[in-house]
Image (cartoon, rainbow, N blue to C red; front, top):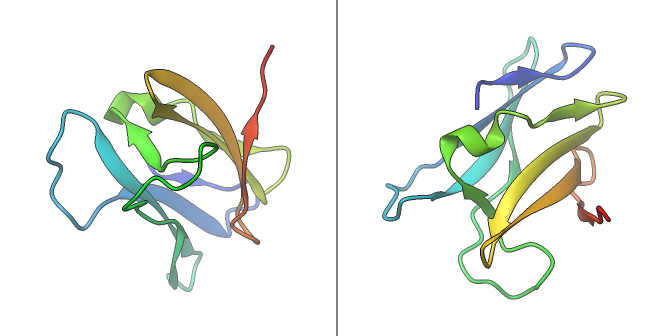
Length: 105
C-alpha cells in the first residue's frame, strides 16, 4: 500500500511493522502522521493473540491493501484483512480507533 492522505490532507496513513515478517503474509500496523506537524500515531497495532472473532489484526499481502482508503470524510478508513482464509472488509474510525466489520451480502 502506498501512503494515503485523508481528504483534507491533515493525516498521512501508511502500513508498517517494527518486527520482521516470519510468514508469507504480514501482520501489519496502520500508522499515521499528522500533517504538517509530522506527529506520529498508531491507528492499528499488531494483534499478538487472537482473542476476538471479529478482528484478528491487519493481515494480508502488500497488494491486499491497494484498495484501502478514506471514505466520505477524513475520519473513516476502509480496508480489508484476511482471517481464517476469508478476506473481510472493515472500517476504522481514525479518531476513536474503533474497528467495525462491514457485512457485505
